[in-house]
Length: 231
Length: 231
Image 1 (cartoon, rainbow over the protein chains, first blue to last red):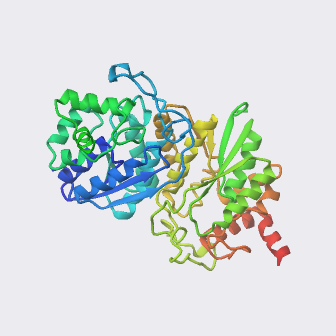
Image 2: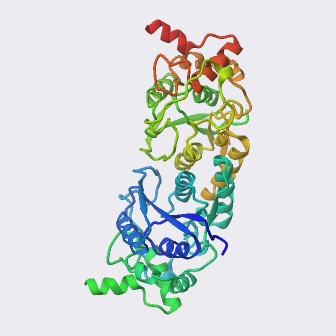
Image 3: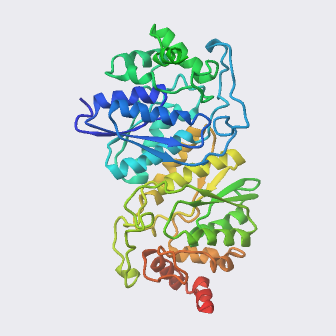
């Protein structure tokens, strides 16, 4: 195993991808820490999801409060702006999503690198995916590689940024989750909806992509199963 | 002029180098914004210096509160640790300074990039210097270049990180300040001491390097002149 004896720091948002990454890291690494960011996001409910997911995984979680650190035009951080709603995944616009928070993953990786340095982690695990992120430039492999170089130079320490999902589409991510012990159960408590609602709104960019992935994999989304049970 | 018609965002700590950079940016750029970071630093007094310096320069300043964002072993962020004191600059140890805050400049550049994106700045101006920073790896030119690449990729926008002092020693930085209108007057209100004291302690790493630079340039430090007048 590539990461035998190694320590990972997982950036856990409480969403589908980072939840899957947490269980992947548990399988691949000797030790796993997790951090989660509060950044005055509209969907702060995801932090509670992160707590629940970490607890199900038996992993210690540090919630790092960044406050209203991001300026920008995204409805995720500016609550006076509306989140876009669409009929279906097929109706989603291409190009840069209006939910783009400039520098969000750059900042998350930077603070994660600080914590990795302090706890002696060998790798940061991040659930970005090139394909399914509405054109977010900070989810691309080329950015991740450049950032890894910058962090290693700035900290004068080797630090790998591991992105198990970067080349996977949402269907493949769902399939991966089915192979990871406990992941599907934890996904019932994950949060995805940009509106920050439970049950999820079902019509924002994030909800629609999640639904498309579970549909394509032919697996019922455990979050929606739980939502039905709650109603 | 290289930056004619361009907009700069200066990361202003309130210290000697960033104060000099602010006045340099005023000379070189069409428009100048400034930001300053509160990060629960021991020497939070520098934020008041930044306000005063920005006001003397006639530049708008945004103070960004990062809270206790940095974990680490540095006495700059962990007040239970003591700042090292030395007899003179000649007695300073080599290698990585114990005041190193892992990822500090990485984070500052990241948040600066977010603000630069939002205000449409073409460049971030940062007062790092390779030579005089006690071995901080995130002050090296190679790191700055790697970070510029990562930021441009992560934001999908050209953004230059301009470091006018990166190859200067402290003597040359003092000489530069004498050539910039208003800079020397503003330096009387800058803050350098790691202990966060005014008048400065005179024996920490930062005080000693500052003193060595003014001595080598043959110019009295306006901060010390002001300190004498206050006493």
